[in-house]
Image 1 (tube, helix red, strand yellow):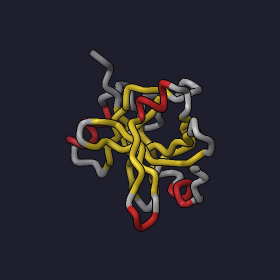
Image 2 (image 1 turned 90 degrees about the vertical axis):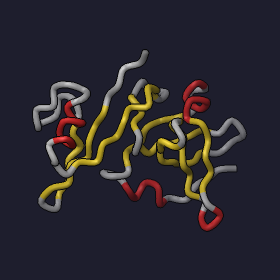
Image 3 (image 1 turned 90 degrees about the horizontal axis):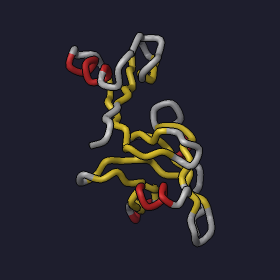
Image 4 (image 1 turned 180 degrees about the vertical axis):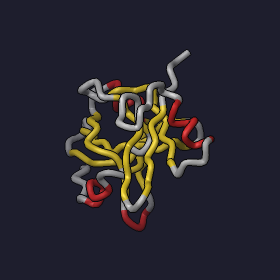
Amino acid sequence: MRDYKFRAWWFHNGNGDMLCVGDKAGTRHPLDCCGYKVQGQPVTLMQWSGLKDKNGVDIYEGDIVECFSPYGGVFKAEVVFVDGCFEINEPKGKDGVFRDYLKCLTCNHAVKVIGNIYENPKLLKAASTRK
């Protein structure tokens, strides 16, 4: 059985804050963010994938990761939860998205968290160098 952790993006008064354990809002438990949602606060929940990047940083849904392809090249992608699996979603223009299993990439130490879609949305707009 794995640990369950959540964080939440709280958008208020035109600003946003990432809420997680040890934050300035007094979040003390990994499930407190779910409590904020139940209380009716305007939060978007993000679940921990159970995985860590190559630097030991927890990977959450909504994170933007830099992926190092074994075939050469580097690309940026969003971590998403689809059909019961955590995957990466790389924007590929009008042809849709490239999806890959996050676990396969983390096993090969090929993923690094560089931000999230709420605090750093422009990171995904950068061109991919996938080969």
